[in-house]
Image 1 (cartoon, rainbow, N blue to C red):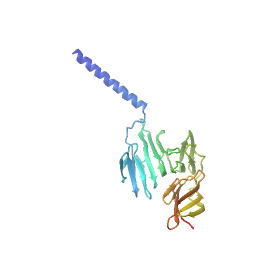
Image 2: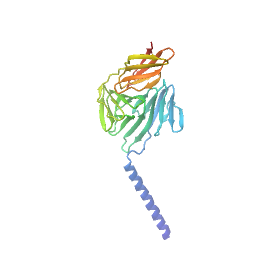
Image 3: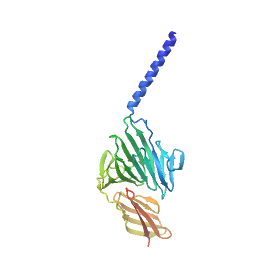
Image 4: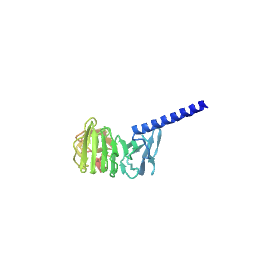
Length: 279
C-alpha cells in the first residue's frame, strides 16, 4: 500500500512539473500558433506553381498556404492574388516572382505576424489597418524589409537584391543595416543590399526607357540607356540588372526580326512595353 501511495505521489509531481514547464514555454514564446493562419490562392493566371520541399504542383484557386516554406512562383506572363486570412489584405504577385512564407503566427494577445520573402520580382499589397498594435505584415528581400500596418504599396526586387518601394496610401517602413526610412503616401525609395534605405523622393511611377545607344554586333545587340532605378526591366522576357542610378549597359541576343522587346515595371506594378527596332 505504501508503494502504491509513493507511486501515485510521484506521478502527481511529474504531471505538475510538466504543467509548469508548459506554462513557462508559453510565456517565453508569445508567438506560439493558436489560431489557424493562411494565405489563399485567388485568380491564378497562367503558370502559377506551389512548392514546399520536394512537393511541386500547380497552384489552384482556393488553395491555402499555411506552413513555413510554402512558396508560390509565377512564370512568364502569369500572375496570382494571395488573400491574407480574415480579410487582412491582398497581395498581387506579378510574373516571374517568387513569394515564400517565413512566418505566419498568432500571438497570445491576438497579434498577427505575417512575414513573406520576395527574392526577386514584383508584388503589390493592399493591407487594411491592423487592429492590434503589435500586428505586422512584412516583405523581406535581400536588401531589407518593407513593413506595414495598413496601406497600399508595391515592392520591386531586382535579381541582385535591390529593393524599390512605392507607396500609394498610408506609409511603409523600409529597414536595412539598422536604419529605417518611412516611405509615406506619394513617395518612393531604393534599398541596395549592404546599404541603408535611401531617403524617400516623390513617387514618379515613371515607366520611361530612355535608350541612348542601340548597337548591333553580329548576333548580339548592346543597349545603353536609363530607367528609374526603383523599376524592373525585362529584355526579351529576361529580367535585367541595372545600377543604383538606373543606368543600363547590357548586351543580349539579337532576335531574327531585329526587334528587342523591353518591359519596364514600377514597384506598384505599372508596366510599359517597348519594341526597340535595331538598325
